Length: 516
Image (cartoon, rainbow, N blue to C red; front, side):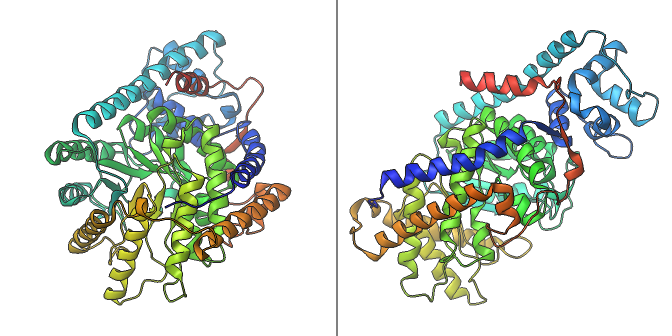
């Protein structure tokens, strides 16, 4: 089942997206942020928190804020070496006000940069080992056929999440996403340790990642297929969480280029700077990013705004490629959100799903379930989820986030998650080869709708190119939400790099990516 899309239109759309993304990337790489510097310290091995629970990476970055333009990782390592301290001991000393590094000068700057590079190389090797382990486990156990069944857990207690995640895997799920505690994306630090309290989800911490990974490895061996783990590399700690995900072998991370700007009011430049490093780390870790275009359709009409989803997918793809991600690691998003009462609504949904599938043929497209037009009518909801599942398997989506009736509550009821898996499994089994058995007539409403959406996406991209992405975001071109470039949370954590800025992490990631 394929559309006869004009390749020259797709090529032109990609060229436009590149023209939009390139100036933003150029501006981004000339800046650093609090989170970029904290990420670097974490990959050098700095972990833990002070007596007040403040992460040690935050202690040092806050203390050395005036030195951020020069890049603080060589400086911190040199200060620790000179005093014969570990990085943690150095940070503790700063926290207790026993040490002041504000005016510290490196005796041999070149040697300090080389030493930081060696320390970071060791950190990246830990990620490399996790990458190899994933490949080995998939080779040994295999994996489910696509579309992969993706479900969420969100109890607030990591131990309860584990029990539910293993249960879901036994019921047939291929992917488990641990939803974060509400508003964690706005915390400018990553909490430490194992957590058992959260609101609407469970805190993303490295210790929680490790526990869940171990549990999913156990159940993977039990069910005989590799179960993937998902969390969020988004918000004010985007690259830090990406690094933790790599160290603890998460398989996918939600990581959209504009979601934090539009829906969390995070400063645009802060978002793009943090995002670039987070995606470089994901590329090294072979983590599949999931973008969030589905959210646009919750604030706008899914028919009228369909082209903005495709346009955003193209822009997201560009930023991802710039960061070194290959198509198989770029899980672009879209959603089944057209009002079901609309005539031919299912035809319109199929047109959108096929369009995204064909514009990005090698990407593991993530398909989001209906939410906007769900009501308290459980029969209507179940029917909509069944149609969503049929659209997913017929159009060859890669990742199917299952719709479940109580998903909007604190955490889905256990039986609703089981029914969602049962529904999707039944539909996928019944119609797995249906798409290969059907053809789309060139003059059909489905084909015309797909071509119209592609044409509108091109016009939209031309407008954004002319305006510039920052101005387009400020004007509310995406999701009808306006965000000015100078506003938003985290703006004070962005600084322009000095001419002698030094951070070996970037060159190491580029070098390692070239070897993969």
